[in-house]
Image 1 (cartoon, one colour):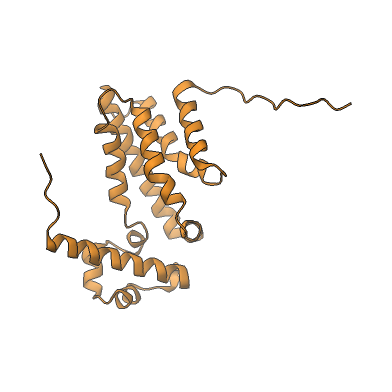
Image 2 (cartoon, rainbow, N blue to C red; image 1 turned 135 degrees about the horizontal axis):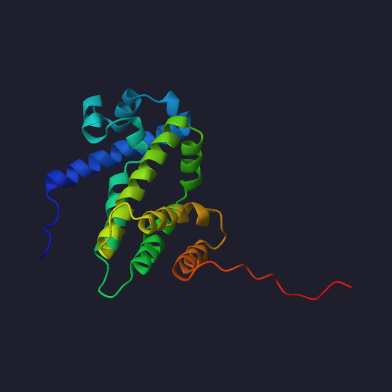
Length: 200
């Protein structure tokens, strides 16, 4: 069944939400998270504070404005994967297609610095990460027909969600993602020492 495109009202709502989130992030990066109020954000986005709260539950949610979409995409990668595609391969493709472009964004380093230097945002990110782990592990468990608290499914979800952090500082991020997924698929093996001429 073809999904109809969003109507004018939905497009306008989405545009307003994005404008508020963009204004908030710009102010947070310029002034620091604690120095910016909801009123400042509303003024910068040219909306009322009531409108801000219609779209976001609070300041933390403004920073992670795409959180719900990313969580649903993560679950969909498992549940809506192609016939014959393994769960790991579906998650590998999802990581390559969605996480790597985020990591390559010009503001990625500034954004991470903002989160890591702000206790409220670090705490929010941790709660978000835990929720994503629960959602992903439940989706994996459903696909293989086991309980949601199955240790193997929970462990796999946690490992997969750590991959962006593990690959972030690598020069070749796609190769790092591929290497980690290969390890998850085939098991860990001790790294081989580099071979070269022996010193005399």
